[in-house]
Length: 64
Image (cartoon, rainbow, N blue to C red; front, top):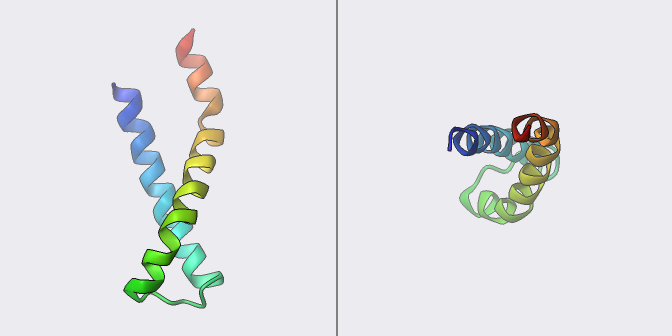
């Protein structure tokens, strides 16, 4: 259960960073609510993938 919360923390931190980078570089620094809502789906998918591949080796070590 601790692993789930640890990975969730990493996911949320990654998602915030990806959202900020996305808004600054792709949406031209638009932080209006409609811009943030438009960015949620693809930034979440990117964050999940980044978190998964960053922690892929960690999960293998814990399974042993």
